[in-house]
Amino acid sequence: MELRRPILLVAFATQLALSGLAAADDALATAPSRFAMLDGIKVHYKVLGQGSETLVLVHGWTCDLRFWRLQAASLARTRRVILVDLPGHGGSDKPEVPYTMDLFARAVESALRAAGASKAVLAGHSMGAAVVLQFHRLFADKTLAIVTVDGALRPFVSKPAQIEAFVGRYQGPDYKEKIAAFAEAMFPPGSPAEVVDEVKTVMTLAPQHVVVGAARGMLDPAFWTDVRIGVPLGAVMTDWEGWKGYEDYLKTIASTVEYRTVPAAGHFLMLQKPAEFLAALESVLGALTK
Image 1 (cartoon, rainbow, N blue to C red):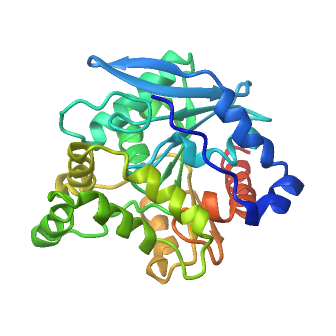
Image 2: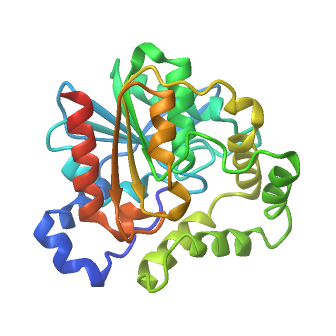
């Protein structure tokens, strides 16, 4: 079911108008919904633009394709852009199945195939970084390059006790409150309340079985063995201190790395710093596909 159209942030109205991003929200909202099928699961996706180059945008944990709304139309000016709701999220079906990175990657491929695209550059935000990594593992011949958007290509917790502690937060009746608190903690102090509230609202829409299943899937130690990238790799990251040295790590798993930082942005940088994020992403895409 289509979510209500998010409110454009008043604080960024002038910036969005100047950068041409104001029309992006309308473009994505009015683009027709499409559906691919995977193992009986309907996978919701939208397509903007056209051209020989295809970019697939993959959202993060308990988010949806609308998180890319402020960049989608601009990105689609020179390429075809496919935006996917992962199973359990947004307009896709939400069955009670294991929500693994494998399921998510195959769902992305089903949308790619349904849209008639044979190869693509894939960009994944947060958990979406793990999804595009798995896509590359399963469909190397369809992967031109991958881009991580404030997402890790290594686990942020790895010990069994740490994993169970993280997953356990969301197994009680107050899981929505816990997700809202998690989302709020991803923003720096002074962030516009409209942005924070929007993210919290969308993230708490995910059913509990999806919240828990996807959390367990992205932290599965078996998933994180032998991380190697055989295609050009890009990263658009915040200046969070936890990313210190991360560019050096990426250079150990990929031969080609393009790394950009968006300063003073929280984890949801595409919403909080929309113009700066778009410029950084276009810079990375240009370097990876030249």
